[in-house]
Length: 306
Image 1 (cartoon, helix red, strand yellow):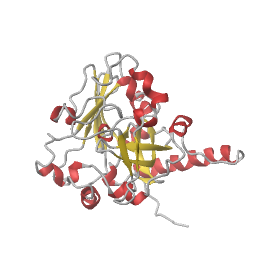
Image 2 (cartoon, helix red, strand yellow; image 1 turned 60 degrees about the horizontal axis):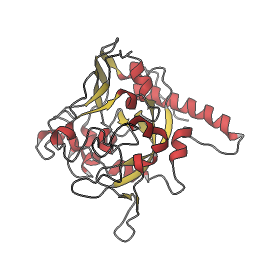
Image 3 (cartoon, one colour; image 1 turned 90 degrees about the vertical axis):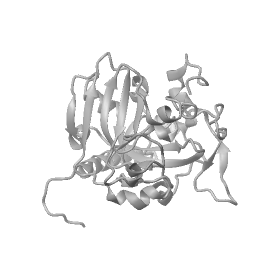
Image 4 (cartoon, one colour; image 1 turned 180 degrees about the horizontal axis):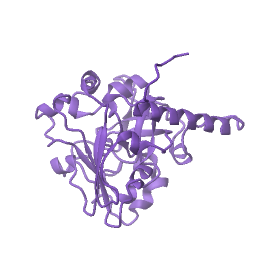
C-alpha cells in the first residue's frame, strides 16, 4: 500500500480517481457477460480484428510535437522541461461563460473514459492508442456557447523558455499553434480531450496536461497542451492551413482518395514497423470511423474541402 501525506489533491489525481471509479463500475457491469470492454460502443465497432494496441514506448517516444523539436524523438527528450502545474485555460468568444479557469474546475464532474482509437498521421504512419479523456462536448457545454458559435478554435501553449522548438524557425509555424473544428464536429461523441494514456496521466511529450483527439482526422488537427478555447462565428485560421494550404486543409479528414502533394495517402504504416516488416495497410476512409461521422459531411465535396 502506498501512503501519501495529507494535502490537497492535484488536478491530475482527481482525473485519475474518476477514471478508476468509472472503470470499476464498467468492469462490474460487464464481468457477468464474460468480457471487459473499456471502449464505447461506437469506438469498439470501428476497430478491426488486427488493430492491436501500439506498444506504450512507441506512443510516448515517437511523436510530432514541434514545440520541442522537429525530430520524432525530440519531444520525449525535451518535454521534461515543461511546467504543467498549475494550468489554466482561457475561454473566449460566443459563449455565456468566458474567462480564465483552472483545469481542475473545467474537468470537475466529468467522468473520464478509456477509448481505444486509431491515430493517423498525415505522414502516413499510424498507431492504436488507449486514450483516457473526457468527451469534448461535455467540456464545451460547460461554457454555454450561443447560436453564433459555428466553430471552436484551440490555441496551444507558447512558452519558448520551456519549448526549445519555439526558439528557432525549423517548422515555419508562427507560434502559438492553432487548430479548429466546426461546432458539430467538436460536439460529436467521438471527439475527446485526452488526459491520459495506458492508465496513466498524459505524458508531457504527448500533450500534457490535456490535448484534443479527433480520431477521424489526421493527427495535426489534435492540438496539444491547450491553453485557450474560443467560440467563433467564422472558420478559424489554423496553423498548418495558413502555412501550407495546398498541403493541409482545414477539415483534414482521413481520405485515402486525396493524396498529399508529396506522397500518397492510400496506405499507412502501422507502428511498430521495421525495414523488413514494414506493416503497410490500406488507409480507411475517415480512419475507419465512417459509419459514425460521414453524415457530418454528406453535402460536401471532400476533394475540395480536404
